[in-house]
Amino acid sequence: MAAELFFIYDSHCPWSYATTPLVNTVNKALPEIKLNLWHCAYFADADGDNTITKQQIAQVKDLSMVNFAPEYLDSLVQSKDSTLCANLMTWAAGKTPQQALTLLNALQTAHFSKGNALAEPADVADIVSEFKLSVPAKVLSKTKLTGDAQAQVQEVYALQEIIETQAIPALLLAIDDELVLLNHSLYLQNADAFIEAIQFEIKSRS
Image 1 (cartoon, one colour):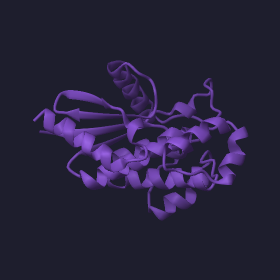
Image 2 (tube, one colour):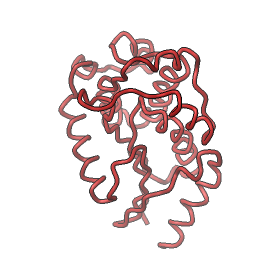
Image 3 (tube, helix red, strand yellow):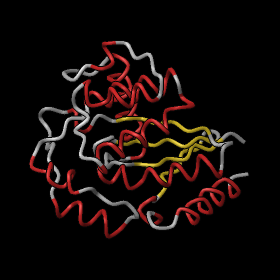
């Protein structure tokens, strides 16, 4: 029985940040499950609401295990732009998938724990160097999504139609030809219980 986990997220979404620890736990505890990281570029939409409120952050903190640095909280007055990160993460997921999750963790740490906007090439230069990534110049574009990132967004839209929700983040478990939308919000403070829930879903379909 083949199982895959799809993580639909945005690097600049605080709820996605709160959900990443669950993905980390799955990757460690259930390495046989293939991990698919799909950046939906929600905060790359110039016409969307790209601001985050302190009330939203307070809710994330109350319901999860993550914290936010003062530098990040001070930056909430600024509109968020995840274009560059959408390009970088889509490229990494395709070219160096074994590093993609660790890279996502590094980007989220820089953004939420250090207040790094991650909107300019210079903002990610140290991380790219640390991971020894040979990233094409077009991937580090801050103005538009690459063709691969746009294609990824279209795949996200198609998947969202199937699961009948556009809410992000979303965690979907694919077991053979069956797709299960996991209620990850129940487990933001209990990753072990999330693993048990996934194991139950897999066992019930075996």
